[in-house]
Length: 362
Image (cartoon, rainbow, N blue to C red; front, side, top):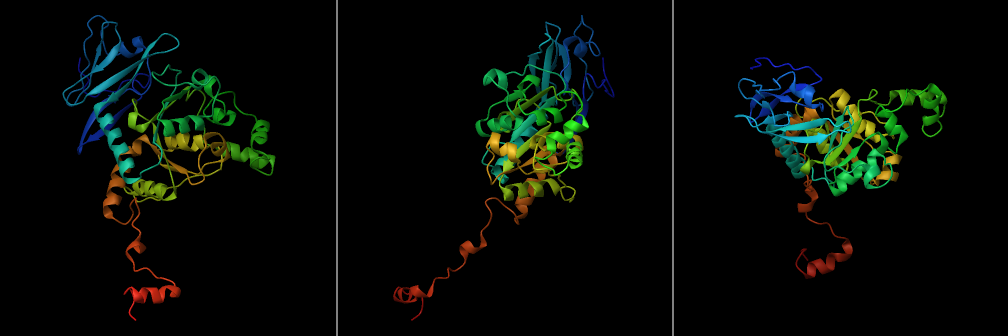
């Protein structure tokens, strides 16, 4: 059964993305929403025959295993792997990584490590609309016996390389949890109470600040998965880099290399997780983030650190931009220190010693 112009319903394949590989484009299915066995198989496969669905040209095969679970298998042009998970409702679910995606993530990590040289590992972020049991992930309530703020999860990932996942019961920061779409809609009175007097001088200003914050709609982020980019086993929605100011400046240069547009970011001095994850996912644009008090207090972010968020659609251009701007030579890490080759200027008290040693003329 061939699909000449495949366009599966959004509930089965969230998007069909064009992947660039060595200058060529090839289309493939990118299953980003976890789906159940029956939902995954029925639109494409006869339950009895296990017939594969083939996309002409560079293709991905979708077939059934002995248990009737839809799986990807290797094709002539693409290779991919499937991570299977069992949801709390007993459904078999999966996240698939296409071969080109694996290679792309490897290239991004290499570029960041080579041209940015951050002191901590870049963090890959995946946001799922359903609550899933993520393989090999530490859930805060299970691993540590208590809830945690998501900035703490990010800190654990970037410093120790762990894989951390958050369900509703794992969130310990009420502001971040609310912005990620949990709970009922906040009333104006609650909005004012959250922000005033901690961040604003009046209740009206507090309401305005809260309503200007980025946030997901209800049930948009039932599972948030965090992992070190060097060992990621899923296709990220966002990559977060922590660094010192000039390292973030190099990120900016890489991000604007393709279109020349200066980056625009919003700062509120709080709720960094919203600006690191929600904003880039909603806008499709890179963002600069200045750590707020909560991240410093709970996640241990240092005074010299700030962060940079890259959405999925900017991965390729960002990687190319980092390499190109490095090769151009004006901005590099380590930074060329022009004075390091200059003749040193010594205090006059050293003149007689310098003359006796022949450094200066008598």
